[in-house]
Amino acid sequence: MKRRLLLTVCTPAFVLVMMVSCSVAPDIPLVAELGGKNGQLFQDPFGDCMGMYEFQYDIVKIQVFIDRYNTNLIVHITFDNPVNPPSTDMDTDELVGYMEIDADQDPSTGSMAVIDGLAPGFLPPSNMGVDYSVYFWDYNSISQTVPIYNENFINFSGYAFIYYNDTSCTLQIPLRTLGFDDGNINFGFILGTWSEPTDVAYTYTYNAFP
Image (cartoon, rainbow, N blue to C red; front, side):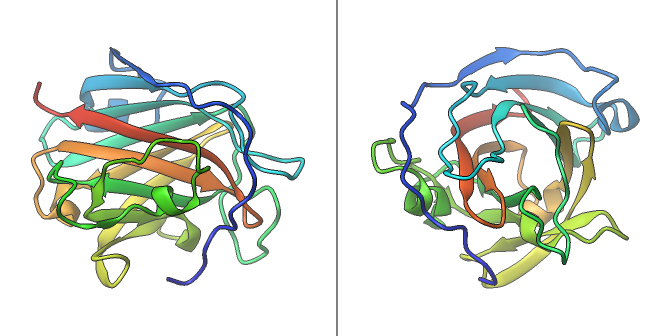
């Protein structure tokens, strides 16, 4: 693993997320373009940042879709902050971290979640066996991609496209990079800056074909 987020003391109480249905919204990058369908909305508590520095990314909601051809997952993450992609400058307001995916929804397979190692101790375990990790650190601004790894960051699986907006970012994850998964996954995020993790959001279940 090339870089690790630093664990910090965290105080906010964990609040369970709420999952509701959501319609396809044309203002979300990639959703209209790829014909996103079967959308689900996951709310994350506002103001539950756990970092110590002044600038902290706060996840407020996550929307997940499957594309019209059933070949890509579209994951749209909205923050209560301006979003800045990572760069070689390693500025303190750049977004880095992980999306962790339990592709077979089986906690007995895969690796231990980074979320479980870095989240505050008072939060419950993710109960995920992580099969794939989307690695936000290695953003390629030319191809607009981030790498996906399996087997605890040992094996490279492929790339996800990522598009940054003012207060959000959108991932396009080819299902073939998840072992031709059926689109039914458990997943979570631990995101923050180069200095520290600032928010965790887990464990969500998305069913592409409910």
